[in-house]
Image (cartoon, rainbow, N blue to C red; front, side, top):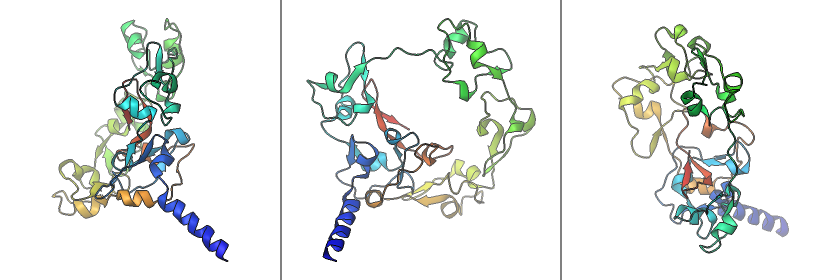
Length: 286
């Protein structure tokens, strides 16, 4: 019996003391002082849509800080890789110093692959872009093309579509003449085809602000009915943010692994991607 109680106690200790920032990315740790700090939403869970190296946390920017002595910390304070090198994102949490930053934190720069999106500007300049009435679909943005763009139109372009293919999300209504509007993207974006409903939180939010430690809940309340004078905006459209203490205590399940996470859906709240340090050494904000 004692052994079971001890095992349970140790398990609870791990849960309480576990560093959820470090679980999302080894280069981060909980901020030294969490008192009075709040997440950007009520969601204390980190989402990892493409595995453990893609975690995004709505609590990241407020509750986490970069660990001292890591590649990410050095990169964020001015260290950079030498000629022909670039930061190795897989080593962001590795320990390094000023003197061995390049050997421990950098890798040989990969040759950039020509794709539909990376060569879009050049295709326009060289008159090799899509014909009138065509667009580059989102699904083809990463498609590889020849350096001379001889196959750009064939590989990248598809006929544009109209807004009649779009169902407006909660809180939004059809734009006037929606069925005849041609989209500049494929698939169409809801912003091209829909307007905020003035009787819902989506429409009222343009001239209202959540007070205190609340945030405009675009995920859960954007379709709620709300008065145009904003008298019920706080109750109908706003939600309390989670505290950093709640984030610290939360048991992480790393939801969304392998799929689309709540943090990356349209209208999602601000997140901090605990993932990359750029060539300039800064954080990647999502």
